[in-house]
Length: 317
Image (cartoon, rainbow, N blue to C red):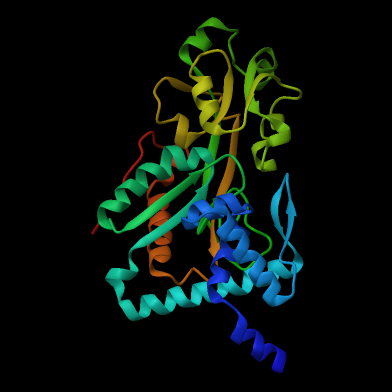
């Protein structure tokens, strides 16, 4: 007990801020840049914290950076919980106007972020200009545990971790081609005609979700001479008129240069899930963006399900 009391007296609480940033970035150089200090300051703070706690918090690697030990993971989780409690307390004290300010980082898939959520969030900021947004529209998984994002929109519901998750929406994918492609190639009247054609596909060993491997559902060993890691690059490649591609309706149907091919036969339905860390769900700025994303997605259900070709903005009351 006495040792724990002495530890609380000797612990430099500012060191925890540096620890948390390195835990999230995985590299001291990245953490230093985000904190606005130099590399040696961060390294010194981490060393000071490990000496005070008499515990190794990171395993250092030249190739992979700073990797949390089991003790480091435990400390990170506790500090993040304290951070959330402090932010909630500040919001209650300062009131709604100040609470609806600050930064929110949103991680999502490339296509959803680039061609749907981006326009919606710029519209959101007309109503809430004090909330700044980082939109991470990337073709890979974004970690909530490492606080790479405050809100994550994913193809699969997180199966572990202290997260609040709910289904955001279903969305449909169909086969598309340009009119020029269809005019130059063999006619497609049935699924049995598809093996004669070339397709754009995902790079299989870099695919971050098995839900993206839908081409095999319709064509065994399809010809895929061109593969990419994201839906947006597939969309632009398809516009060149050299290949067919299975694309989300909310992307392809907004472009009149693309036509659905065998829409009654080649059709996939996937889902988006929205999640955030349970400690941050109560923050007002998180709640208002969370609710807005759910509202605009529901408002655009016809676009997501291939029943409309126009993206709709949600009018503010």
